[in-house]
Each structure stands twice: as structure tokens, then as C-alpha cells.
Amino acid sequence: AVVSARASKSRPLASIAIPQRSNQRMPRDSAQTRLVTYFFTRSPCHFLRSVLTKSAQRLSRAHGGRSVADIRWGDVNRVEMAHPFADALPVLASFLTMPRTGLAGCPQCVRYYFAENGKGSGANARMVVAPGREADGLMQMAAGQSGQLLSDHYADQQSDWVAGRSSPFRRADLTGSIMLKPTSLR
Image (tube, rainbow, N blue to C red; front, side, top):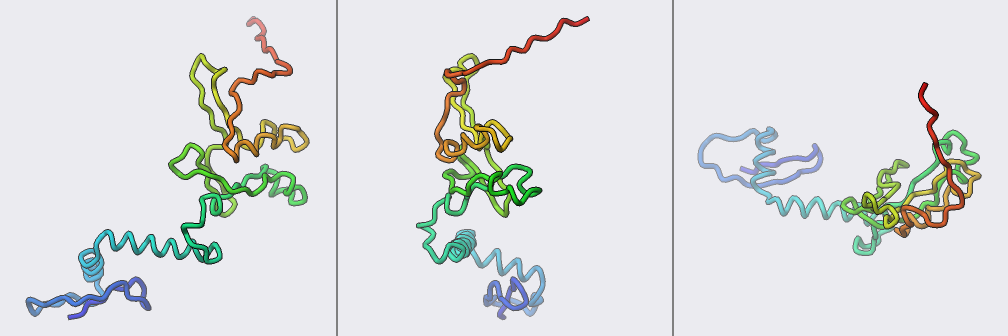
């Protein structure tokens, strides 16, 4: 008997011949037939190879037919970072949005960042600091320290963050300081 498992009504997932040892037959389109056909006739390696091949074909099509070997993480994964007001004020969006730049990294890396459909996630600040040795610490910060568009520090750290260049965690060239002193409790 020939048993077909279908991924959809129009496309067969697999078609195999099952030798019959008795007069009992499995229904052609039952869930059991699909499971038997799929899991017992294909190896996990075949399944994984199939999934990876289809993913590579989709990725290649999405990037103009380029070979997957020529597509880098930064070609696919680009910074999508904007001020919260960018959507509310489309006239200013180009000023409020960081440049779309390719990034290095991967999901297992410290420099992980992933963007899809305008939503980004990842480390917008990276710090390596040992307690008590803050002067030896390193820091990387996306955009800048200010959320105000007209500030010099709105996007001054962005190029270093994209390139993975670190700044000292505690700056030696401070231009000023603020001392906070609590008032005495009454």
C-alpha cells in the first residue's frame, strides 16, 4: 500500500510504500498515518537539512539571490533605533532616528542586537566593571546619554556602540560635578 502524508491539501509531505503483513490498513489521511510516515521514514538529519535548506533559500531570495555564504549578520541585522517621539512626530523622525547600520554579533554574543519589523532588542548598554575598580571598567552605550535632540550627547556614542569601541566606565576628563547632600531629617 502507498501511504501519503500531506503538509497541506495540495502538497504531499512524504509518500512511502508500507509492506502489508496483515489485512488491516491505516486510514490514508489519519493523524497516525502522518506521524508514522513523517517520523519513522525520515531521519532527524534529513529533517534538519530540509529546514536549513529552505531557510537558506528564503534568505537568499530576500537578499537578491546572493549566496548565503556572502550574507553577513549585519546585512540582515540592522539598527532600528528611534526616539519614542519619532512615530508621533513624523516630520522630525529623520532627526530622532539613529542611522540604519549593520551590526556584528549573534544571539550568543555580548554584542547581541536583533531588529525585525521596526522592533529592536538587545544590549543598548554594555558594561564590564569590577566592584571597587570602576576606573578600570569599560562601557559601550547606544545613541548617547541625552534624550534631548538638541543636546551634544543625543547620539554622540552611537558610532562607537555600532563599532564595538569601548569608553572608560569612569571618565578621567570630567568637566564638572554635582554633589548631592541630603538635608537633615527633622
